[in-house]
Image 1 (cartoon, helix red, strand yellow):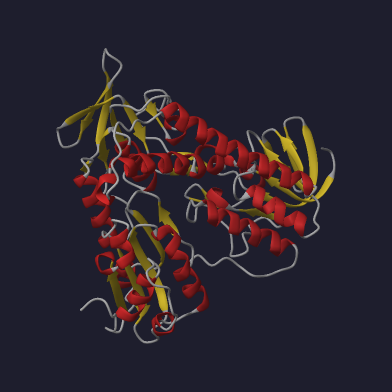
Image 2: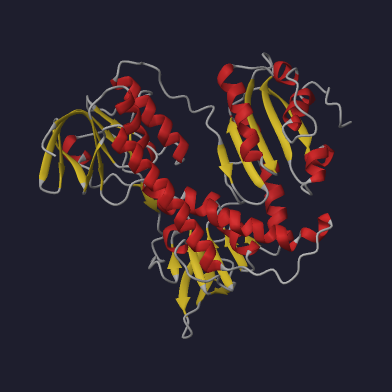
Length: 457
């Protein structure tokens, strides 16, 4: 390892390994340091395994509701061991693919805990290497509550719950954000009695209220208990190994497993930032639009920066950092990054929300189109949902969008492009969309901004 590299990257999650590949593509010498396994939390204990479990759960749900489409399917069972095996196989295949690409690109991968140990040196265990530029991509870990200890057995984080071997009969989820909602959806689809406890006034804090109302209504209709403005004061383990949660409302609820899903915390304590004097604010590394820290030659990306705690943000931040090292001065834009929730009734958003615009005093026009008026949504039995487009009143430029319903995590990217390119709602409405598709609802929402949507009155 004792070599000189143009770029040394600490952390191989979706920020780190993408940075390494792009740096190699640009002809830079690269060393990628990883203390555990390639792919980081996203690939191994986050995005990929979670969505694999969700897909199996949604398939199970689809079979159990097949009669709505004239299909008779009886005695449908869920083999959770096989579900877990498939999840592990998907993760292993993707990890192997990353390993192969890194090797073919000539990236040196070193395993161990990496930390900045000098002005231009990184230490990994007892070895040291020199760098011209270093990228900190150290990721994040599950945030914890002060009075509830995560043991990854009965009281678990997102990492622990991915490893369980059987479906629990009862599950308490503390936290109503993206992680909490996705696991609530998944386990309810598999037959678990789910209770969600959220400290704020709604699920998915910060997302569009119309979308939140829809997903909350869907959850309650399916039997998921949703308690907002509620705190878990304590958790008691019972003699039979189950748990009782005592709530601020005076109620208590019981479960076989408790999932603590109260957010993420950046991993920045052990990478050498204190010794180097890198500026941090509220536990996050401060960076500029090129991902440069306060120390020349050192960059930071992903959850260590904590702009959005999204894997695709980390990847693009990594590309932005490497391109800047190579002489390209384009910076990050956070106004066109999609946000996605992969529940059965999906939620997605990009840019500014309607309420955020109001808070900032921005005058807007809104266009909405409900899936109840979409032929494709009705065909697929998914009439719940909508597309909302937010435009700036004086220019008609699209500045945000909120979506809820079937496959909206695939539809949102058209609106990401629109915001990035400065497209107006009139221009988007003039793009011919195929019929019948869900995506034509985007066109109708754009037409609705000016009261011209065809299929709603």
